[in-house]
View 1: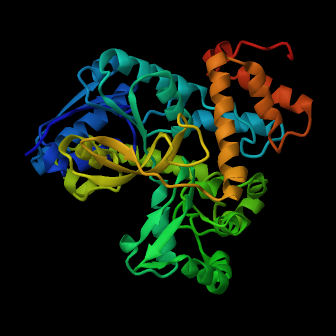
View 2: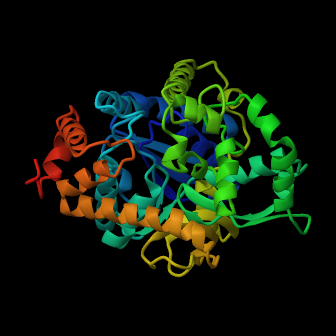
View 3: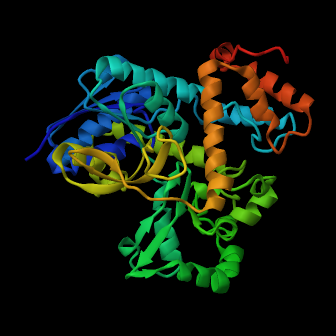
Length: 453
């Protein structure tokens, strides 16, 4: 028996996300009769997504209804689930920040002001939900998941679950080391969002870590010398990933690989050594423009298809479910179709060594009873001291600065950058960042403790 729900998608004009969500809803018969309300501040992109969703569902004969609105409150009305994928400032603004900091001697950013605009949106959205749809689940699908979900869970009473797909990196590990059927691997990779570590890697009842060790010893150097990345984010088996494994004793998974330490990120040649050719990983002046270009071309194709009534959207987008977890989690909560998912939720003892109100990334059982994080125990002490606890403290500093509007904490963050060579350099770049077009609201918000100026 199907159970229809109302899903509000905030930031629906995405080139990647919204149609995947629609596809999964269409192919989940137990959610037939559901309503989807797309909300975005960009009317043009919103219209494209709405048209494609309606046509795609019609081609499949799926029982779904769609709405679109520029009004967030209208989207939230009567919602059972709210999915936030919004990116407030966008990639071109991030490029402008990197260009500005480069003029002060920083490579590829080097410093940043945190995530003020994203945190502001997330907190405002959560407070709107408290007022309009207090019983709804918020599924946070846009970054920063760690900081944002912790903020919303602490400051509001809504139910928050953050999602990321980086954990699927374990499949690439399995394929590369020769496991014929990666889907049969039993795995766990707990930690913090973009900071997760492969604690369990079992295949056919045996620990599969020796396969990783053997691959590194016999094939690693040849792979790093000859492998050409298939896409900008193809770094899961890079030299940097294996080096982090040697440093910390567990394999880093997904976006964890991109973090590492500052020593992986000093210049483009260094990045290429650690993350490979031809771009040196996704976070470089070579890779990011290509990634943004791909997103723009993808949306342009979506817009073309939206205006072509004769095109087959099923042919264009396929009729196979994605690997995204949003719809299966909704189905589990509503229809009791139980599953285990990788989620970001308040800790409550799931990962030892962190407070209960810190959002952690752990496996969870999802069914009608809710999202129930699984106790995963402790990560190795070295990983806690060198990776997890510093990340937690960075999060606490960012949220404190955000809640108190403390500009001196922004300065402290700049001065802590390994690329900052003097106090004067740090002050100069921060002043220029605060005066940058598009940062007027941010600058007004961080108005406390400015005597150092």
